Image 1: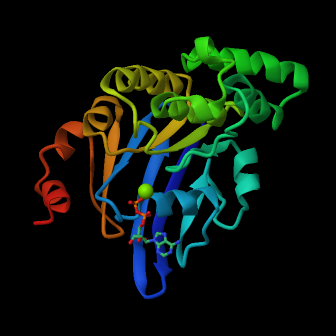
Image 2: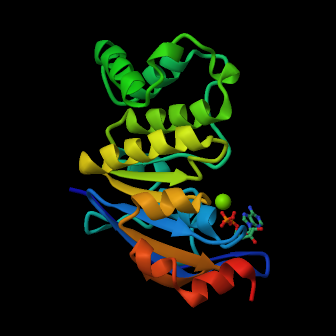
Length: 235
Ligand code: ADP
Ligand code: MG
């Protein structure tokens, strides 16, 4: 059962503090939300957690082990997967092949085919299996990106704005998929702007503003928090 925590993370770009002592904790079977206005530092925090950016200060601990200095590949081998705010699909490959290629990174060929078919069903894209990824509407492309991240059966899944571009119907189905992933025991960390999605699926929400966590709590509390409203409204 996976657990992930980041503590006291500081990142500077030139003179600007993108993260200023930020952190969060996520646990198996739970969906942890990370919200905040544009530029708050959410994607940068994911970069630190996934090993793409070395922080100035801070630690990242996965299953009780300090992985702050591990490479992204080492973290992936320990069960961490992530998606990006900007989609990173193989545009010319079919939906099914995008999943199969991802599955082949961690499994035998034969098994990769089976995993790809299971994932197609899980993300609800079986009917689009042969469609080229480039030809997918954004909502479906986002689902495919999540499917690719699931191919390695991660214990920790970091999702950066996975519902951006999804319509209301797709977002509802996506909420069910997220609950299903968590119910499987995965620790899900969700960066998302769609507040109704965040508030309906998250167990715990962390609010980031100007590189700092300004509030932590269950959705019911966060929705009524004055500091949170101020962060969003710039008051
Ligand atoms: P969020 O994902 O919450 O919108 P980001 O983590 O993308 O925020 O950005 C946090 C801050 O860091 C912003 O001020 C952004 O302009 C800055 N930033 C992010 N990446 C870079 C970079 N590679 N170089 C310089 N500044 C950056
Ligand atoms: Mg971002």
